[in-house]
Amino acid sequence: MKFITAFFGATLASAVLMFNIASAGEMPDMAAIDTDQNGMVNSEEAAQVPDLASIFTGADLDQDGQLNSDEYDRAKRHLDSKDTEEAE
Image (cartoon, rainbow, N blue to C red):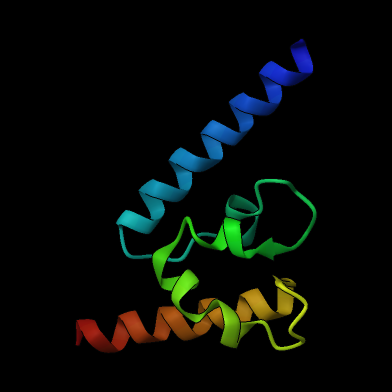
């Protein structure tokens, strides 16, 4: 029971963190989105960040249905630069 409570607590904390960061217009670190902590971001996890969800298929360069750390970093840089351009 302690495991289940800890798991749901960590999941809730991650969701709150992702919402707060995404609301601020910044891409969260991969660890904040990777709720199952497998080192990859799948489409369900990416859906929590609308900008990432909108480019997920294109960001998934090897088309395995998940973003590895290199694919995620590339997508993050792309979206962060897009936000910077829009702010100017």
